[in-house]
Length: 126
Image 1 (cartoon, rainbow, N blue to C red):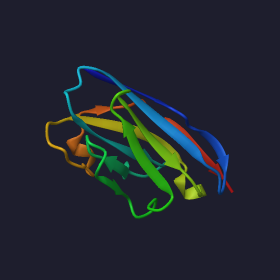
Image 2: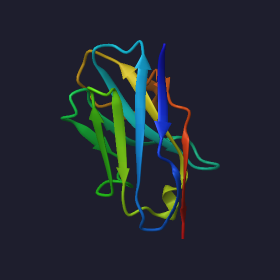
Image 3: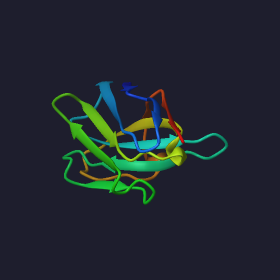
């Protein structure tokens, strides 16, 4: 089993910033892809950002491109999401996800991920 522990959510005003981290532990492969998703009330879970094992390839949803930055530190088994210029529409529960894979790929679709964090709330006030 793999455990993912998220931290860094909270309440912020429009235009503010937050930084998430997601620490992986347990039976991870020597390489794994990771991503961030979010779910707003009454909406389906949606893709936010993803990063390959090497960190050399990233992908972002159009709605966050230019404002959010995904990164990872494999020595610490930790992934990060820096969120700047936050908007009220960014309000959601954010989840990190992991898939054990030996392929250095970016995964946008939630169904490709095997493990999920507990979710952390972000509320952006106007």
